[in-house]
Image (cartoon, rainbow, N blue to C red; front, side, top):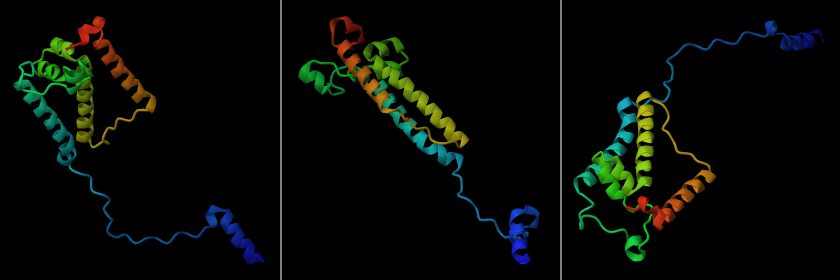
Length: 167
């Protein structure tokens, strides 16, 4: 009975616990290797290069001259300006540094250019520092709000008092 009491007491007091068996020191198992800085920067740089090439092309080939780009199918069939109508003219003006003309051609697109630039800057900084890739996570109500904003933009730019928003 005294052996049982000693065993129970051994589990109650930390001093009476037997010392753990030492683990022999051996070679440490390497963890997952962190990708190099160049590898982390490759994907955002690839996206940035693609967008830069597209802007360079639109900056070089003027969409204001007929025959270079197709006409918006919605505008051609219905005469209604969609949210993207004037986007190429806006990109052309933006590529040439003419922000006022870019806003006049498609204000919603210019907002998108700045949002994209901010996202790309954040992604490049995080990739450079080794941080996580940024993600755009919005609740459903915010996606609905963005859709409603685009719809209001379309409606206003197609009415007579919103002609300032038309390209």
